[in-house]
Length: 561
Image 1 (cartoon, one colour):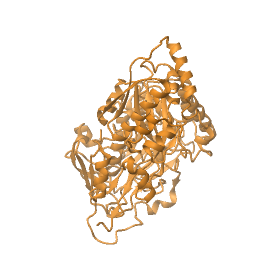
Image 2: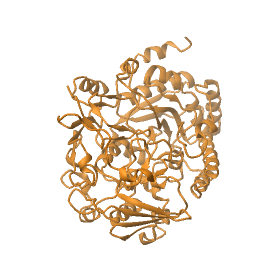
Image 3: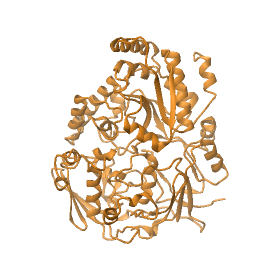
Image 4: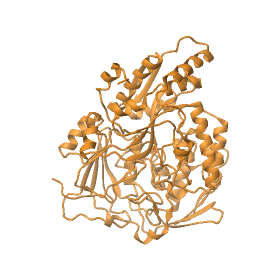
């Protein structure tokens, strides 16, 4: 075996693979097309519990959710809970497709030029406090996301609206933004350009409504269970910060008769071994992070599953911090990583080495597989090339010794083991010493936002089913672009791809954009995610979307021990 002893020793330390990420960044069969045929069936269930038993589900959020306000949420931990307590204009079905009538919108029409979409809000939709859900609640929420004072990371997700970006930049007033409540139940949306995936995007939590009356009276309404108001299948009844979140069935929900679960509890256990023991004892219904030292055995036995999902695990370089202000240094660190060795011996969840950024299967509507057509941009563990880049980069910086380098990650055994493995790879392959530092999830997100890091861990899951969800996050000053990287040609290509619904034009522009991203390498893609998890056999009807998100609106308990 060519792999050196140092690694064999280190790889005896195993870990988990699929871990909490930034950015729901997460989703799909690709931009799911609208399916009008299912309208009359939206909201009904095909599976039913066969016997009466407590309909309570216990899950693990791993950490405190940083925000349960749709206006400011930006991570998968928050998104997981938001999907159960809130609902957008549409809700993706079990096949991750858009069905009319599945969410707050009863129907919609699209103008011939594709620029105006008029949504009709259902009459029988209410907030958990009894107030009706109105078109104004959507207009208010979307403008709050765009409001520069909100400083929402996901503001760019609403730049599709006419004047959305200009309002966010302070160039026009809120009244000029392309979203307007024509009456209590009619929402008119005007886009800058036709967006083929816009309807499915409304299922994403940044486009959820907020209770405008409540939010105007109390800006902190989403900070605690006592003041939280929701429009989804469940309502928040307990939020013991850093300990537990509890939601219960929302009897004001329009489809409450078809919600079988009465209660969902999220623990906040950040140790995969403890989570596993809770699962084995039956105290936890779903384990999202099986211990990596058991994962292969659990997968082989069928006790755990690990389907591919649309997500990329990566390290980010802060291009404003030395030595990562040099592209060749960034390339050196990226190429010196042995991804296959990492996956085979550390993560062990069947992930795929990422030799580009956009994961396979993310482009169902483009007419080709984006990853397949783009190909690989570098070889895995290309140590000799990495050394050449390091030498060239140091010459360009005029240095003979690298400054002290620190790799940061959010606290988790999995992230730590990955960081330790890559730390050893950089030491062995490049002769570089790298320090490791971890922080709790919420603090870590704030650190990334402040720019006080050199290298930081990040995971990104699709927000909707299109390569754009992976590419537009790296535009100049993008809310989730914490690398501080900027490239005008890249920005122009993303703008071009967003200016048309011509899939060939969009595809070509996005392919060119990813090439620029990989040429300049502000990020080091490591692997494409799988979704390793264990679910008790008595949990029925839970939906696990290919973007990594979960939906428990159709779930129920049957046959619990």
